[in-house]
Length: 546
Ligand SMILES: [Zn+2]
Image (cartoon, rainbow, N blue to C red; front, side, top):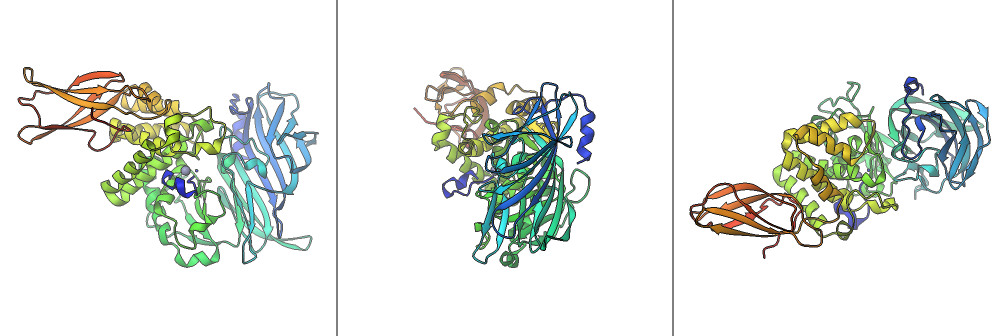
């Protein structure tokens, strides 16, 4: 996602699946070992006014023999009316925001747990009435607020398909993850309702499972080219807004087609059935819910949605949504990718200068940030997940990808990215999974690279000088890295301006040592006039001269 906080603006989130139960191995999530949720079948009823909802959720899960309970996250103030396991009513303890469901003896099989509940939602599903007396409901779960309105295994390592059946007052339009299964009008107890069904047939984590309901109008983005999804069909992109925003559409949303084309070309087909873009009440600038991106409604009346924001949230559909970090501490696999791919979109649209400007902004953010100086990008010690929405996950993560791109070159970088994506699509990944994929595509060890940029705080602060030895005609770079963040291995670009004003562009490997003297390749008949270090600012380094 992108934060809505101004100060952080530069940081710029059934049955088919049941065949899987024939597989014999139960891996389970790291959050709840022995349990592998396959599917959620969610039925929700929204009120005419207010935030009192009724839910009926059937969870289908495979379990290992060790799993005698299914622990579903659900806040205590939701009143659980009934719990069934495989059609039989059971007693489930509901406390500490968890529903502890006992499972019958068994192993490797699948179980169906049905939870019927109701209550007034306070968060997670944001319910609002605006000045025109219009009620809206928007899911806003990141990082672990799904439990506020849905019983789920609320952790990014647990991905499942989801079906939605939502009954809402009939004046509303309901959008959710996945493909539309249609809508029908009903009258229940004198209430005129619209029952809308959607199904997401690809596994997604709970924090991306959302509905939107409100007096929304739909606008289909005219596509100039067909962007094919995983099933080979053209992916429909639509914008859903409040009626008063309709006048300026498509506006910036004309960029969504070219952005999708770019990512398909660089990575893979779009991973979901459709892509909806919604004016919403998310607390973030944008939230990358799978196949239904929610944008901050405050951006719409003044047309402040930017193509950079679209590019960021759309990149998440591949990175974060289809390939999800296994643990929150690897959030850069989501936010760093979205940040960097938005820069690649800037290059596509505005050329090299626009790309350089994005990178310069990321770099400046990193070099001036206090969290970067204190904590590593891969921050598994941080338990306040909101605090992970920082310059490490976004700007430093994004810039680390730019360095990998620069060092490995277009071909090896994107082959590695594609193979990482293919291996973990609709699953989970850690930073090491990315490292292994890029090592294979480049034939280089990246252990030191990942350790120094992602597992240590800070950035390089080398003091660089040079010497000339007239007898051997050798120019050497003299590097000192004795500062607060330690020494980094740096592939340093050096531009030498010779005595006759000719220039030579060279790359030298500065070792991760406190002091090093590294000769430049080639001979120099005369003492050069000057040396420029890292002239394009491709390194996350604040270079000083002694
Ligand atoms: Zn994001």
